[in-house]
Length: 156
Image (cartoon, rainbow, N blue to C red; front, side):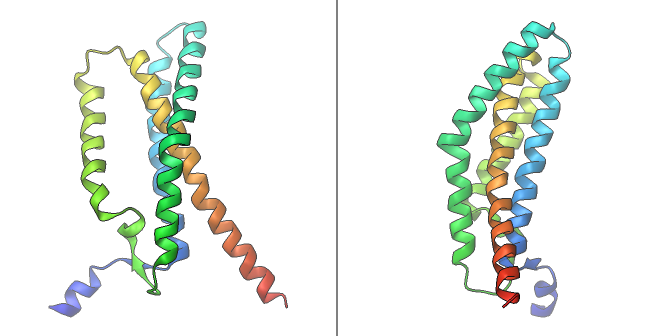
């Protein structure tokens, strides 16, 4: 039984765990921006620019005060792992998965049942999407630095 359970443990190295985290954050950010962009096609271009600006301002605030700090915390936690291989799902703390589930539920609810017009809802989706995508770049930057350090060390 233990052998069977060990096969269900998708383990990867720290370096690839950081890439997986970045890909997940980028993917969700792009998905949210894509939803918002479809909704923004429904409005006049001047209103669209105003809504995009509002989403970008919201995204900058969410990045600055929320997601960038969470990404840095995750990066520090991943770097602190002492095992060679870590579970693929360990890029987030386990206690945050219920929050992620709630956010998914809320996003679906807002898309399907919200009385808020979709172009206005696009502001929140753009804000979250921009901030998630920008925060994902922190994971990639660290991956690039670790690869550059490895290449420099091997050249000696």
